Figure 1 (cartoon, rainbow, N blue to C red):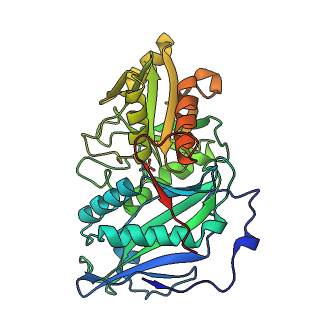
Figure 2: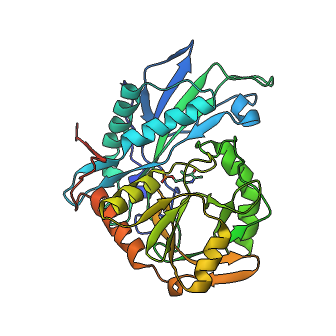
Figure 3: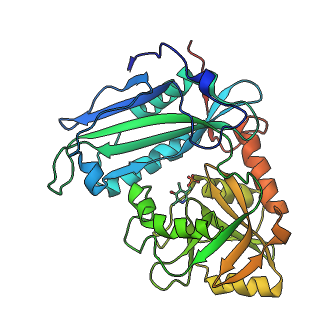
Length: 356
Ligand SMILES: *Cc1c(COP(=O)(O)O)cnc(C)c1O
């Protein structure tokens, strides 16, 4: 691996008391190029602009995928990456669907660990903060002819972050969208392709203008069944049972936080159901007074309680707009594992050794 260290650190220009999300970038980035049918040697270089031709095929046709994962500064001073393996495997899945060649596992994992190690001094230390990693792969051919690219670039940039939402762990308001479709069955919904977000922007922005930071998507065909929230999977606690849409339809992203929540909940013996959920069922549970908790799950926010669901002009207030006991317990447990306070009994963490 080629490593060119940054001559000066950006650390002094990072406002650690107001990190926000994805505003600041660390000192280094990873570049891995695919040319002549092979992935070349990884390079770590100072974070910097890159030049691409205007004819870069990604700019026109969007053959690209991404990931989002985090590294944490533990309470014991050790740096830990959360679920590196699952994120690698999902990156490969997304790549396959977009006809992007698979990045070799060892090369990827070693390079990511080295990158995090190099910028360990920039990782924020407060509970709730972390180093967010954004791996992504773009097609690099220069042509206006529509085709599958023959060259690619994988990059990983990292960002010291606080909570994803300005609201933090405070419940957010969500609007149930019955007009647009983010994905349809057979589309790209189950992979982390940039295209899914492009398709969601209009509905999300107009919802924001109405005061809703996120949209809840229903299935793309009938607008009847629950899919997921813009950047998160969705979970309901109805009459004591944790219910979330199953992955079977292929229209929702298999979230790694979703998977972590389900594993923990099952281990605790909570009743858990993964299945299709008609939105009417949620409305009905609300009317019966058994819609106990609603929350989103995703790497950025971990658990994001939903305080209000707006559906066809009517507001359903959940748990008095407060975080519910199950949401709180899941949040405390997942963050407890991430910061090394609780036992890593599922083997989710990779400790990054200090190689300096
Ligand atoms: C990334 C993402 C999620 C959350 O997945 P995590 O692995 O938990 O971060 C949910 N929905 C969509 C559409 C996503 O892109």
